[in-house]
Amino acid sequence: MKTGFMQDPTLDAMGTYMTRLSRRQQTVASNIANIDTPGYRTRDVSFQLTMQEILSGEPIKMNTRAGDRPHLAGWVPISLEPEVFEVEGLTLRADRNNVDIDREMLKLAETSFAYAMITQLLRSKFRTISSAIQEGRAG
Image (cartoon, rainbow, N blue to C red; front, side, top):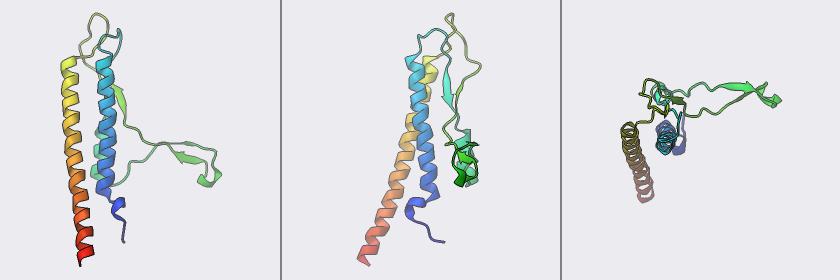
């Protein structure tokens, strides 16, 4: 079975991972922005679903809801967004806020590193595709 290079499961996995990294960066930035907000609770993004999807090689089953489209027999998929959750077990300050700037800066650095790594892998993948195209033209 032939598939186009844009239907490559590796590219799909990398795209999913980049989406989750982007959402995590937004979440960490929100945590940092709310460091002085009384009662604010630290949030994070779960990478468990991403890793399950990448390692299984099959798309994760999406949640469904009843829809108004009869051609889909009453069910339509809901897009699977990265799961954002409140982090448990962190120390609460007097204002009931549990944001720890050192933890958040570490998460930001981890996310930036992972984003740079996946970007480099994508660049390498596209370089390989470009090379194959160039060799195809020459031959």
